[in-house]
Amino acid sequence: MQIFHHCQSVREAISSARANGAKIGFVPTMGNLHRGHLALVRLAAEHCDAVVASIFVNRMQFGLNEDWDRYPRTLEQDIQKLETVPCDVLFCPDEQEIYPNGMDEQARVIVPTMSDILCGASRPGHFEGVTTVVAKLFNVVQPDVAVFGRKDFQQLAIIRRMVEDLCVPVKIVGADIEREDDGLAMSSRNSFIAPGERPKANQLHRSLEWIRAKLYDGNRAFKALEAEAAEQIRAAGFNVDYIRICESRSLEPAADDDNELTVLGAMYTEKARLIDNVSIALDDV
Ligand code: PAF
Image 1 (tube, protein in one colour):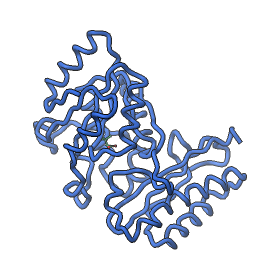
Image 2 (cartoon, rainbow, N blue to C red):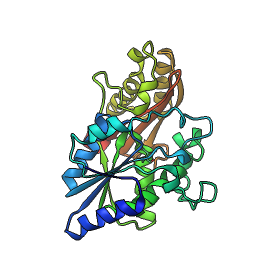
Image 3 (cartoon, rainbow, N blue to C red):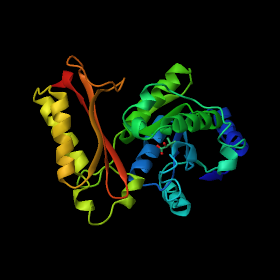
Image 4 (tube, rainbow, N blue to C red):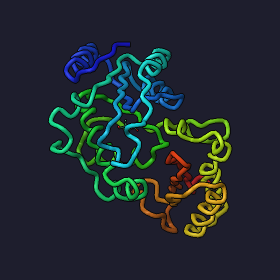
């Protein structure tokens, strides 16, 4: 695996691979890699000839009171893990490389409305930071295919919309959520869960699955289901940010005649904010 820190050098390496006919796959990450990230790289390799991963903890997508400064940075271990999967190039720039003119005056990419609901409502500016850095990384790497985890379902939907609206020539592929044995979705932020909270931290997943089963049974009392699931999570000792049954593409609250639904949720442990989701296609029932 070749490692680059500068836009210019990574671009040159990729363009010579492309000139040799290689189809380029891209997996952008913020590092602290776990099994979920490695699955994204493997999936990218299935779609492409050469895979580029990036590691950049993008301060623009963190709010002032959020966890940017304590976000785990584990570059040495990340490199070792990437050596075990088909990753050809690692791009790990510093902030000066990505934002040479500073962040305040940086041109930005905004996907309106979708960026302001659900996680965007409690993390103002978060998705603007994501779409701006992803657009920028796309311009550096110029991939044919980019892979994002479905765990960040809203992020995936927003990036799909950005690519569609701005005619970005990149195919976006969503990868299934990797889970711990008890159902907890894998996340770099799981390291913030206190040992005492861990046994019940899968409650978000359990409650989303509970809603999914009710929807499959034909229950369409969306608001009541959301309220009951939130109560289950509070009873397990966590604060709830939101539980919402949405139409899968628009992320609007589900309507009675929608068939493609995704149930999204976010909850707080003492030191972590955890998200998860489950999708359901009622046509399949
Ligand atoms: O999902 C992430 O890790 C980040 O939001 C991303 C896509 C790498 C942009 O910083």
